[in-house]
Image (spheres, one colour):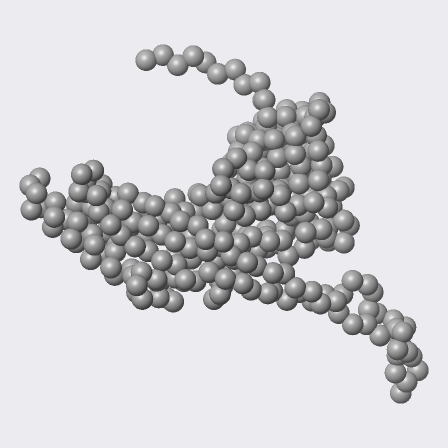
Length: 319
């Protein structure tokens, strides 16, 4: 391909990126909503938790509920309940304060050429960005914390760092990956949150989910034995779905309601582009702000220190 064609390709790419930009690089409201929706649609933890679009760097979410019984014995007709028997809801707030993150996408000229020919360049750019951003945000949601291994993961406290009330530590114990570790998690959850157990989730690594499925397959019954391997069925632990999450550590699991995890995303998302003529790539940079909190931290159980050496003997690969 000649130099003129390369310049034409990148010029078209710049035009496509410009179609995504408004107000000096910031996406307009419709574009921001589309970006957030595409982000949530990615097959990660993000598509199950509660995503809250934010119009400013800080946001207060109001909570309201009743902590105790509100029904009382009805008084004689025409008489009001005594003041000490009346109920009032408990109100509280959850605060979100966003932190800035960036994503950088490099699009080689030949990728641009292929997609220009199909007339889908803008869709390709947005797809590449949201796929990568979704993966990176999931890593931050899971592994974020002050003791993390790099500056990015130290930016926001993740789901394990935020969980302090109900933590099961298996470090040093000879635990096995079977139903018992999930039973212990249910025991650790306060009873008031267990009324809708089927709405909760055990989030585990794919390896841990596989080991748990294998423990069920070893049961000497038709329903939980060989048929558990033959069928493409979901795994449950005492009525709670056990869901694999790609970036979840093998040594941990998270037990809570998905919507109890609040993921705030500020609507002011910026997309800017540049080109590197030496490496023949178009560079697209996305800047956004986000934060993570639990609505009810007490409604979370985390397990750490689970055995992550599953003793798998893999055959030698020959070439």
